Image (cartoon, rainbow, N blue to C red; front, side, top):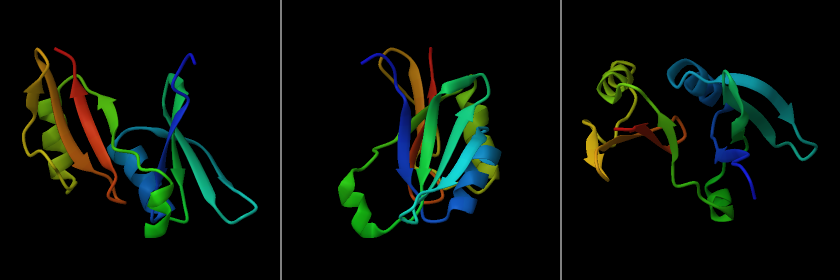
Amino acid sequence: MRKLEHIGVMVKDMDESIRFYTEVIGMKLDRRVALDNGTELSFLTFPGQESVEVELIGRFDDSLTADGIVNHIAFTVDDIDAEVARLKSLGVKMIDNEPRSILNGIKIAFFYGPSGEKLELFQHP
């Protein structure tokens, strides 16, 4: 194994999730495709970092979460306090209302995406 390829996230509403990951997180939609079985997939990347993707998987159903659960997706930020404030101003549901420090000065803060997926802001010391 040599690199992270993508992270798959089950979503309830593809349009809402694409808007969230593009407008709130700052990713860009690379492609959106429908499989023969009716499942819809969307692939998002950060500009200049197209080698790692977040794959949004449509047809969310509570019974499908048994297939596998993504605990969280972490995004590197330069100013975690500013990002927490920005997310709050957009009405994003926060898990951590303030950043917290772990492991020798790393700062983290968790929040939720539109389908209840757990997301993390991560700032290196």
